[in-house]
Structure formats: structure tokens, C-alpha cells
Amino acid sequence: MERIQKPKEVEALRQRFTAAKTLIFAENKGLKVSEVTELRKRLKNAQSSIKVVKNRLVKRALKEAGLQGLDGFFEGPVAVASSEVDPVSPAKVLVQFIKDHEQLAIKGGWMSGEVLTTEKIRALASLPSKEELYAKLMGCLLNPARNLVGVLAALPRQVVTVIDAIGKKKEVPGT
Image (cartoon, rainbow, N blue to C red; front, side, top):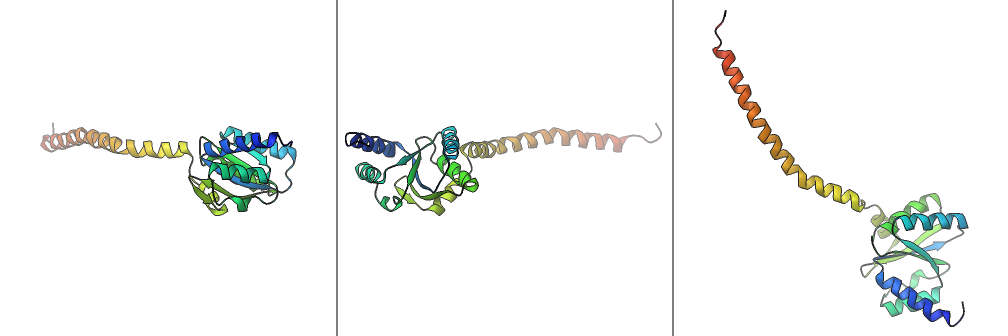
């Protein structure tokens, strides 16, 4: 990279870091080009992205963005996965991808001002998706109404059953 391009790259990284809801740092230990392409597609489908970065430029961009405590993650080849939309999606995609491709290793991350360890990222990846949470919320909101309808429907049924029982009791035998 030429000297003129470095400040532009640092500024682009700084903007990416300040806009991101989540940053996850991963070490590439020998993924093939086709595997990296597959990972990029998966991340893009999850509204996330990944970029292999130069450590010195990233450290400078992190300092300019005001993100502290992340310098320890930048030894060796590092890729930064991020999302500006969903803070959980990059973690889910990376953890799933690592199950099939052990050449990628999560080093750590950052979310909402907190440094994330590998364990926290795995816990984040195990959270239900946004759609699942919406479905559970809707179920919780609809259950009381569903129960009320069941109770209200049971009342006329019980009245009919009681009237029928009284009618059978008062019925004259032999007619």
C-alpha cells in the first residue's frame, strides 16, 4: 500500500468502526479463496461484512475511533467482521462457519463499548434470532387473548350442557 493511501484506509476503517454495532476479530490460518468467498457471501446475506486488515492501520483507526483495549487482538493475519444492522449476525455466521472450517479462529471482539472474549462471542451466537424473539413476543402477547376466547366460548357450551342434563332428568319415562 502506498503512503498516500494509508490515511484514506485509516479513515475508512475508523468510519467502519464507529458505525458498527459489533466488531469481531478473527485469525485466518489458511482458508482457501473459495472458502473466504463463501464466508463473505454468508456474511453479506446476514447484513454483515468481513475485511482483512493491516494491523498497524487498524490500531491507528481504533485509536482515532476511541475504542480502547483491543490492541491485543492484532497479532498475525487478522480479519474484522462487522455489522451496522444486527449485532448478533456476524457472531452467528462466524461460529457456524468455524464448525466446518477450523482454519478460522475467533480472537475476540467489541460490542457496545465492551471487549468481547471468544466465550462471550459464542454465547452471543447462541442467542435466538431476531425473528424468533419476535415470534415468542407475539405468542406471549396473544396467549391471554386466546385464553379469554377459550373461556368465553366455554360458558355457552356449559349452559347448553346443563340445560340438556336438566331436560333429560325431567323427561318422562315411557313416552
